[in-house]
Structures are given as C-alpha cells and as structure tokens.
Amino acid sequence: MSRRSYTFTHAITRKPGSSITDGLRAVDTGSPSLQIFLQHHAEYVAALKSTGACVTELEAHEDFPDSVFVEDAALCLPEGAIAMRPGTPSRLGEAAEMKPILKEFYGRVLSIEGPGFIDGGDILTTEREILVGTSARTDCRGIEELRDLVKTWGYSVREVKTPKGVLHFKTDCSLLDEETILSTKRLDASGCFEGYRILHTAEGEEACANAIRFNDLVLMPDGFPKTAKLLEDAGYNLRQIGNSEAAKLDGGMSCLSLRFTPSR
Image (cartoon, rainbow, N blue to C red):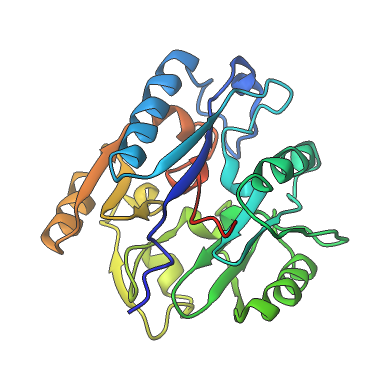
C-alpha cells in the first residue's frame, strides 16, 4: 500500500524572525515571543530529523513576517512542486522566494499564476485525492488552476468548504495515515470526509486538529491531553511540540514545514 502522503525524505523549514510581531492574525491574543518561538521551532526541526529526514533550515526572512509558515507558499508532490499564490497580498513574495529553493530538489516546479489564489494551508493530500478547502485565502479559481496543473500527474482535486470563521481547511484537520483523518466535529459534519476513518479532537481541544504525520511520527501541539491520549490509544507514535507562539499567528504543525521526497 502506498504511503507517499506521509512518508518523506526531506523537509524545508524557515526560522521565525524578529518581524513576527507584525505577523497576520485573525484574533489578537498577544505578540509572540521570538525566544520561545525559536525554542519551539528547534524542537520541531529536531523531531523531523529524528525520523531520518534531511531538513533544510532556511534563515529568517525579515521582509516577510509570516514566512516561518512555509507550507502556504507551495505544494510538494512526488512528481513536482507547485508555488502557490497566497490569498493575502503581503505574502505573495513568499511563494516567489520559495520557487528557486524548490528547484534545488525538483526537476519540475510550476506556479499558480492567477487570477485566483490558493494557500497551502487549505490543501490536504491523501492517498486517493487532493482535498482543497475554499476559505478567505483560497478561492475557486485558484483551486481550478491547481486541478489543471496536477491532472497530468494523475491527481484528482476535490473542492470542499472550510467552516465559517476557520482560517484554513487544515486548521481543523490532518492526515494520520492512508485511511485516517484527525478532524474537528464541525468540519467532519460537513460530510467532506465520507469514506475515511475519522478521529475527532476532544471537546474543547479543537485547536490541536492541525497535526502532521511525518514518517513514523505524529507531531501535534502540546497542551491537549485528551486528544493526545486518543491518538496514543489508537497506536500512533506521538510527539508533542510547543506551539503557543505560532498559535498567536494562527499557525500550527503543518504550517511550519514543506514535507516531500524530491524527484530530482
């Protein structure tokens, strides 16, 4: 059985910079501490490396306060990479900056040219399809352009809806294995995961739905004991990482890395 949706040899991360205090946020819950963020980020990178993966750690880019969230800038698939077109104008340059880096690993690097827009945080790649949620950062035209780009690689793209008030589709869900998705009840209620096995986040712990399966590990934010026990009881090898500062900028586990096996 294929496991390419969560088995990777490489990852790309970017350190947070001092400009993170200017980062975007849906609700202001206070400015993130750079010192604490750097500590959490180092723990995150160490967890990725512990699986045997090669992690490229990019230096902070002060011109782009949100650039620590590298996932929004690109979609990485075994056949090639696609630079996104973020839905926030201030982040458009992040995708342009990421494209030459991706060319170091991929023979084919494509781009979403527009007029639509799409963020990587709205894309969930499973073994059978690519799910993309419309949101304030991703529109139907961006999804349609992505569909056209990946169809030659044999991928099916299914457009779904991100719940009202939720920033990204993957804010409320993450892939755990070939058949299993961790999801909030509000997202699962939309019916978008029919045919998958669903594990729900515990009541009051919806903020931990954004986890990542990376090789033999499931990385999830620290501080959600009921959901952590649920995943451990289900047999997953869990690694809990501090995420308090990223969360102040609406960031989670998946946002902090691009995960892939290069085709070059």
